[in-house]
Length: 263
Image (cartoon, rainbow, N blue to C red; front, side, top):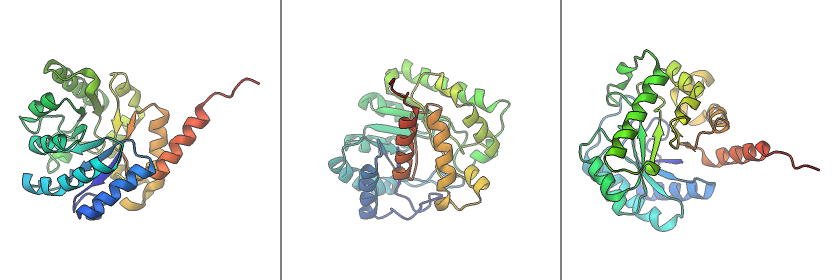
């Protein structure tokens, strides 16, 4: 899943693709580099990020989505917690809703996904981007996050969303300390056991930067290392910025994982 942030304030690439032409070009590049999904977002959810108005979020993402739907063959995802944004994006041809609030942030989001029946990615987060890091307190982060995701999936299935439409994301960096993030990565099989496609967004995040000492745009090596660990553990979707080099890494991993033919 290639990340396309149409924002001025995302933590690693804010401002690079704020203009529609730059964002469209970046989306085409992500598809060419081998992204299986392009995730378009118009509101930063980094810690401390300020909310964006509905009008502004629509202004940022709709021209990009409209252009990319016509020009790429891979599915598009809309990274939003606003039901109106999701509705407009789905009507324009987007196939997946990626909601960091797990459909809790907007009371009409469930109505939208019930109507359109897109793929839905449910992520774990406490609070809001402004408050979440003050809520990173757990007795057992793995089991608490896992339990939340299981409950949200059950709630959506009861509301009429087919099980095969659901994916889960433990939300690395969202109301999590670096230690929590590493605990989740180390126990990633516990999330796979839930039986839903598993999405992990680790790319360029602070808990990796703290180990490598690199700034966000230069933390490729650390991100690739975590990508390799997650892919080897069977994670279904890696949400990343650096698609081309990650694709090469995953192709190598698949090749090396194939059993040698009998001679």
